[in-house]
Length: 121
Image (cartoon, rainbow, N blue to C red; front, side, top):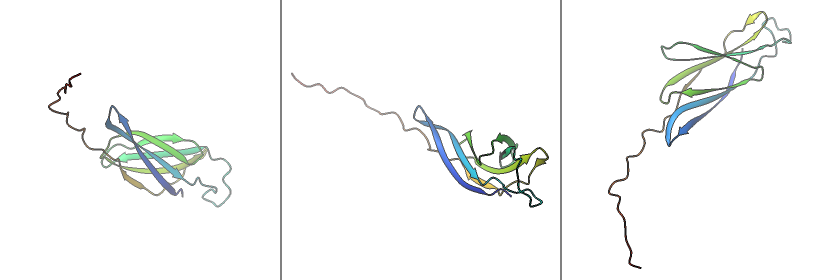
């Protein structure tokens, strides 16, 4: 079984507003097959993620044990899981990670009553 290790999150700031969040996930790639033999033919990992009641998204990742998902809507809760695969198929999914994408709230209101201050020479 693959065990998720860490979650690193960030927000993309565009023109002063939070537009989308991203998450970086880390895990321990498997070193053995289900029968206990040494794993020598890992082809990669599949990252699964979804919103509650939403469609499951699947991304193919390399063999290094990390992936970043970008463009996630702030304030939305996502669930993530990872599976390893080789030419025979896919492993069981890892433990689930639930994470709510952060938001920064609203933009500030515009300044009011702007005026010019003149000074004598």
